[in-house]
Image 1 (tube, rainbow, N blue to C red):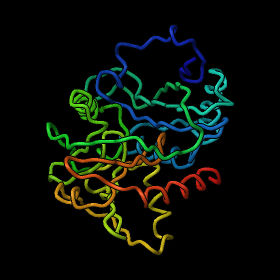
Image 2 (image 1 turned 120 degrees about the vertical axis):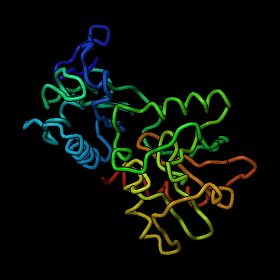
Image 3 (image 1 turned 120 degrees about the horizontal axis):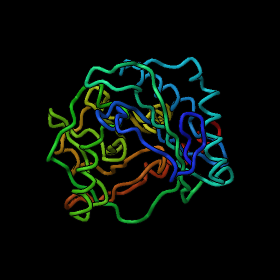
Length: 281
């Protein structure tokens, strides 16, 4: 079942207007949320990121787009798909209504919500090999639009195809200043000794939800130092650990980049603290 602007519709009965601006111009934003037994993990952070993204894109936010209203729509969608007692990923896509060309005819919005069952309720550490490579065919622009989850993700699509064609598990993206920004499916963290760093938003990385949780956790781990700073490609092979974060997997350790292999000591410690935060949040 798909939630089409508050109405639950069978998947095969949903129709997409050919003038939908999300389709024609990538004029939309989305949030992908992990749900565990009907609870939306880090919902408040997802909600405020969605509202901030809509404001940046100059969308008119409906009066009924309250946290309570949207949460109910999401939970209703989970229930309609028999996912209230199962772990799931649920996505809300908000698009600008109306026609027009680059200039829209109106600023109002519509939305779709769909959900899918996933394997695990909480975050676990994978012990499988996970190899990455740089994707250099196209670059991330170091600007505020790159930090948003918009429906224009061609860079990530082509990068994912490149990764599959070359038997990589993921790729790391570079910005137009040649700094490493993020992975195709999440934010990047680097560990060297007792120092941890992640690219700043100014480099164009996604304003990630799990990134935000770790930014709150890391200052409390007094055995480590931490900074938001640009990462050069040369630093990757000097690191002791690299890991990727996103809402669905939590933390994914990278095991290999080119000839370098990595440990996951810090990754394991952070994952435990993230699970505690997820349960309490």
